[in-house]
Image (cartoon, rainbow, N blue to C red; front, side, top):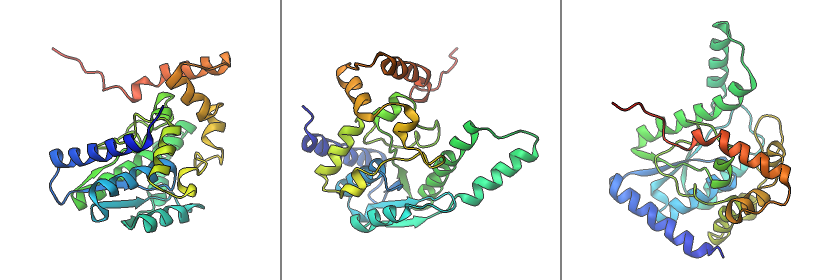
Length: 243
């Protein structure tokens, strides 16, 4: 049985320990804020661990973002400082230069590039503020590769990457976050589809398979296994030739 209060307290202690051993007393946690459950929970955990003065939220819309008000609401709710860096023009400029080179953009490039530019932005803010970048990935998404290598899968410390989606939501409720932050349906930001639409199965099904090894639908089980196998490179250390 998952004990959300116990795990929440463990994570808070772990964050404090990380900053004690890897930073100075002035170092801040830099969190990319999307308004979704993962960034909301990570930001709230960092606030509990470090205090409001040592957490900076970074909002990074790609042009117009219809639900950015949720991100603003989270920063206001937590009482943290925040900055807005619109990556829209940077993304367009990069696409333009790639096209000028004679290469044709495809879905893989257009899906992953904004995430990588966002991570570049977070490290720029981190450099300016003497910060450490929080990774906001969870176990469920990492398990099937629903993250961008060197994009949202990067960071300096990772508080929730060993928690499933269901467990992240439970931690969010333990932190007394409003339902609009914890239960907000995640969208891919491009097609308007939900993450679950794109994956072809629900997170509840995936979480049960991860934790219990149970999935009644053999086709879904095979798809999860295939995605996990194909995307292990995203979570494993880079292969290195050794003399």
